[in-house]
Amino acid sequence: MRILPFTPPAESGTVLGETLGVLGRGGVIAYPTETVYGLGCDAFQAEAVHRIRELKGRQAERSFLVLVGSAEDAFPLVDGVSPAAVRIIRTFWPGPLTLVFRAARHYREILADGRGTIGIRVSPDPVCRAILGRFRNPLVSTSANPAGREPACTAAEVAVYFPVGLDLILDGGERASKMPSTVIDVSGPVPLLLRRGSISRESLERSAGDILEAASV
Image 1 (cartoon, rainbow, N blue to C red):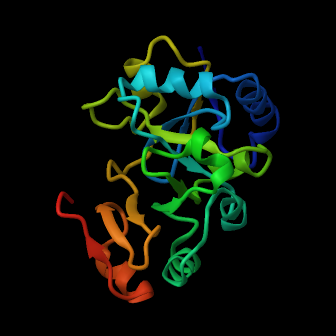
Image 2 (cartoon, rainbow, N blue to C red):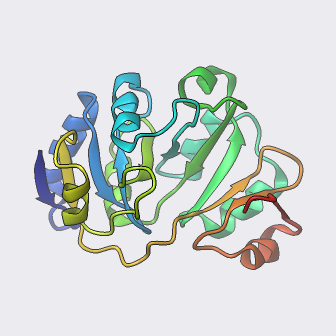
């Protein structure tokens, strides 16, 4: 496992090339996002996704969200985008907001959960944007921590959690927020708040109108 500094754009050339090579070969990386450090891989490589699941100790029936470079990159993955979702996307993407859509039929077996939905985010973090500006596929994104532990906010914390099992850790400095992305289900006619996070329900409602809230949030 290697730990490489990655602070785009100054150091994006060689490190970015190595990162893309690792992902293309089915490797697993850790990288900074706008909230915490995440574990990632090519979302279309099932073996790599399975490796992340084993590292996390995550149940097989739970899917991972994916990062894409832009809203335009998300649309082919989903089956319809509601007017409320469009308003939310225009206001909060890129940002710490995961939207849950009905997955397009072609991707349901690859990326969707048992309900046929897929969680997608467009990150504003410069490391994520540098990778996804060049990488052809969605990038799996799940917080860099074993299940039940606090998410890692530095590359050093990632290395402590996962001394083996990762092919590359990208060190983009400390990420100060342990608060995860807000998660909204936009697969139905009215958005449903699934997880509170960095963006408040009140802010979302100012953009999209009424938002229901899951009882368990």
